[in-house]
Image 1: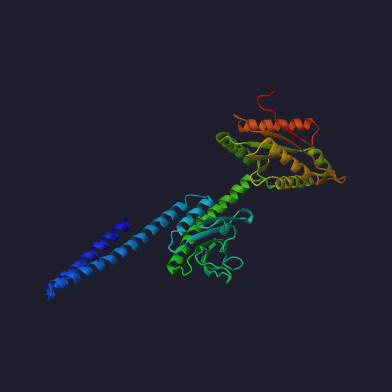
Image 2: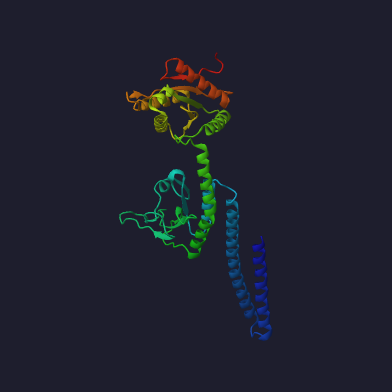
Length: 385
């Protein structure tokens, strides 16, 4: 608001100055043809005012963009969610003139990149334009893309060029890239707009690094050190959340609780260190068998659990069979005994709590053990005895 007021005051002062010049000219040299001079003066005044209006409009637009960017930078410090930070950076970048699309890539947990885009088609997102430079960028580069002579790109909306800006962390190591693209065939970005994009990228780095450090700390707090699966605390928090969501939206939800059969005797026979390797192998088999939406956890010494959103008891039974078949390839001890696993399966019912769902799955696991082990049992309905 202060910037707008300054611009309006400047406009008033310039207009007053123009009027003063015209009055002075009329007093100093009386025109031989008053009507002609008046028309000329009015035309000059109109031309000056049009130029002034255009300058003021552009200045006001720049001031509004700057205000939004400043607000963005102020808001960035208030969140530690990496995806939210990336969304805000892309929103600010897309307000720069001359750019039609944007992409931001940040190194995530375990090296897997986190990607966010604006104005890009699914095909472009799946196979994004590159800088043409292998490895991390050492500085900002501008790229113009050429298409084959056999391609008729007239009238198409293809990306014609891009600016690639490295996201450099505190240790002077690139941890990602901010890329801005244009689709006009005769466009080249203005140097000042590239500088503004670099300023956005640089100003966001502190928030990005804070979010990444928080993500790493949260992962350590939620992960079982031996198996790499989620730990017991994360399991119970997530189960509670998934049960509430499923009940609210009337969705299906299933739970499988696994237990390695006779694991105590395994430890006694081959030792605790070898027993830890068995647990790691079992966790790996479990990780290979679950879907990307399933949540695999270690909830005890030799006990595991998988939460299956949008799934039924039949889906959970199929998961058990995949894990069971995979375990057949895991041999134990000098006599090459096969690793065996039992499971209890429960499907969410109306009115179930997370504790009730877990108790029914755990009860089914104990029945599977009583029935001879190396099998799965499905929990009875809570209304059955």
